[in-house]
Length: 438
Image 1 (cartoon, rainbow, N blue to C red):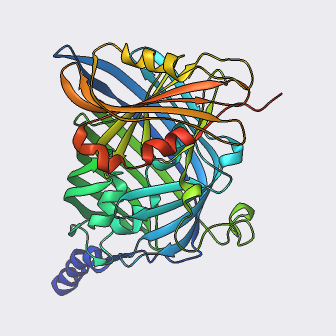
Image 2 (cartoon, rainbow, N blue to C red):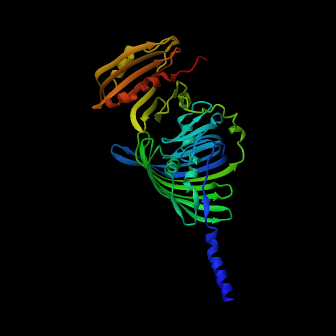
């Protein structure tokens, strides 16, 4: 009897360990399909500096994304590098300092190609240019391309830990560049075909030129039969420094992701539906963004290196970033309309420029008019000088369409950034389009 009891005790003692080892690994491959729902709940504060004093603006936001994703190619790091997504819904609402805003992805931009590279996520629509808000909707939600890299990629026992891969950390944290990866995974339970794991730690990176530090606590569920992560709750505390296109912030966010593996691609992601997806380098025209003046006075289709940072009834302010560095600022103003075939005289525009508050010219670099056969006219004056005693190079551009519509575009940059700007200021001017004849 004593021997039988001892044997029974030994079996009970060893049974959990015999079944505790689980292979936590995914092997993404071209053709893999899954359906996702991703919900975000965020709160915190923006930190702005006014006249040397910090002011705190409350922020609360919610977002929901429902989409099917098909992997088109995997990278050498083992994660999807190129995917196609069809969104059944993508919407976000935010309340900033009491002001509410809502964003939603229109139906004609529901098919998105998502690329992942060393510079972060890069998304574009096959149907045509996205707006900046639409781009943010499809780029800044939790990126499921990271999921395989959250796992150890091998058999582990309950209690074992591992380091999350740098590529997965960068994608999960939505960084343009990863500075420090301190995210650690741990298998906490395994039973009945399901394994539970956690991700904890901190990560530092760069997003839109600003340093970001995250503290992460996440819990995931892995289906050992499907060999896929099926659910993930990702919580992070987010401390962002002020950047060239966004203020500093302190935020807390919770993401709830659910994933269903699909046996075949839905009709929106078949080979026929994705025939227009470029196989190699993405054509530049597919990467452009679009902007429409709220009053319909002009429109822009422009490179995404330009970021909209402010907008009023009269002004549109954009900043040019080059690998996260602030290079130049552009201000677009709808100028007074004239009769068809006419425009504001160059001397009148030059007088308005010279009377700009705080602007002192030291040397004129360019002063020229150009006209095209389609009736478009452009006047440009560029000069070195000082703005409120700070050295700056500015160019002032007046553009007129054949129907008398006009817009003025002013560029400002430090003298040492002129070379970096190159022809990108002229390209933005040329991108302005006016309403056609009704």
